[in-house]
Every structure is written in structure tokens, then in C-alpha cells.
Length: 141
View 1 (tube, rainbow, N blue to C red):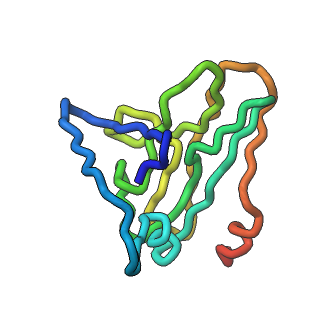
View 2 (view 1 turned 45 degrees about the horizontal axis):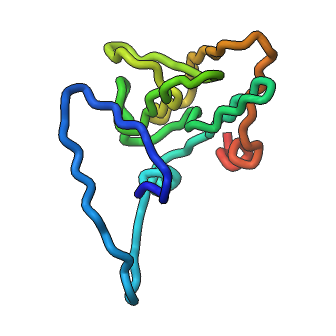
């Protein structure tokens, strides 16, 4: 669901028609919802990574994770790097046979895995990567 005056990016491999139905507020009753992120925590783990360079902070979904139903190649759990604006700093990974950079790479669980990312920016300032130590501690690794 898009927030009021919000937006998003759509990665389309071909021309498509998008239809956005208008929904009116639900008066009374209950509404249940679920997201992929909720399900991620029940079948694996994810570690969001924040990238900071000077006054630029990228919280656009960079990270790593493991999930039992993740595929070796690009799948629905991997996130494509967002388009760049005037100033940018991003964390990028590549998958074989996939042409776009990924900001999040989720793989099938394994005892030992090495993620390869590169930091890309249009600035020369030092880069800081941050993640939640509580999330890492909860992984029982």
C-alpha cells in the first residue's frame, strides 16, 4: 500500500499496464494483513545494513539474509538496487544470469556463506556500514 504523497519504483522487463484500484476506508470490522518481511522471520533471518557517507544515508533496503525457500539465482527475496539521485551511496551485489545490481541478497540456509558486495558512490568521503547487534546476537551463530 502506498502512503499518501508516497511513491515507489517498479522494475518491469516489458511494457505493462498498471491498474490501481481505489479502496475506501473500512468502517468497522477488523483487517488482517501479512507481509513478506513478517514471513521472513519465521523461515529464516534478515540483516538490514545501513550505509552512511557524510550527510548521505542509504536505508533503502540493503542487506543479507537466509531463507529456506530462497533460490540460488535472483528470486523474490532479493531486492534490486534503487535508481540513483543527485548524491548516492549504495551496496551492490550481483547474481549470475541477472543483469541488475542487488541491494539485498537472500540465500538458502547453509553452514557457511560469503556475500560479495561493493560500495558505490559519487563521493570520496569515508563510508560507514551499520547493522543491528541485537539482530546478529539473535541468530545464535
